[in-house]
Image (tube, rainbow, N blue to C red):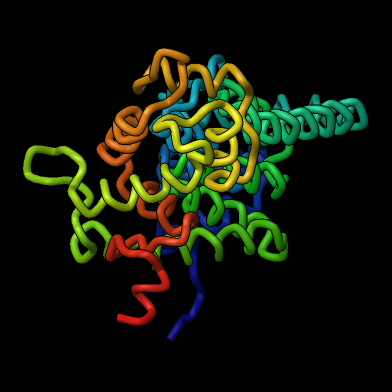
Length: 319
């Protein structure tokens, strides 16, 4: 019995694997050998998968960043309606870029450094616009260097600080496939997974943060009052800028700008001096808890409270 195989017998999966190793012109030549290959190689899925393999999963990345609320500006583009045309245009652009690779590498390194500075700036200012600018820079770098693992790490970190943990893991997973040995991606992935595992049950099993009227629960108010009083050193019932700065530093690890401290009182509740009151402190945590209860539980733990049970950690240990 003959064991000869023809291209007509190749499955779609095998043809896709074969196409992944070919240049566009080679694919055109291959498609001319028989009707079966012509039909298979012209499938949009073939060119879409080849584009992702060769140029990165740009549209998944930008969709995740956009859904997290980041402003990507001109970097947010719709998926191609013609993947074959998109691939050919990207292939031509990459070929042209290779002719001036040194200049492109230098520009990408500059953009990468700027993105790192923007992220560092965010940690001190809280300006979300800086995160959007950093994301725009990283997407632009990945357009030219889809194998740049550092970009995936910075994008994952950007979503991490926005508390978009699941989406951060999605980007980090893409980065780990690009470079499985890039340790910063592995470290951040482990940190996020630990957070998700540690807080996975707090929505249902922990002591309630809110009551039926969607106001702060009595146990949470008691915890917040104790924390507030621990920073109200002059015991005047409000947190002056230095006291509020101490609270923010212990919570987030960075000193906020003076304008942020002033705005806290204006936005949530202030006394005659403009200082944040206990009621304003409650209002801040109510807004945060309605948007992100896990963040509130995490903040409590940073101040020595059990985030699940809403009691001091030393009491929880002895219970």
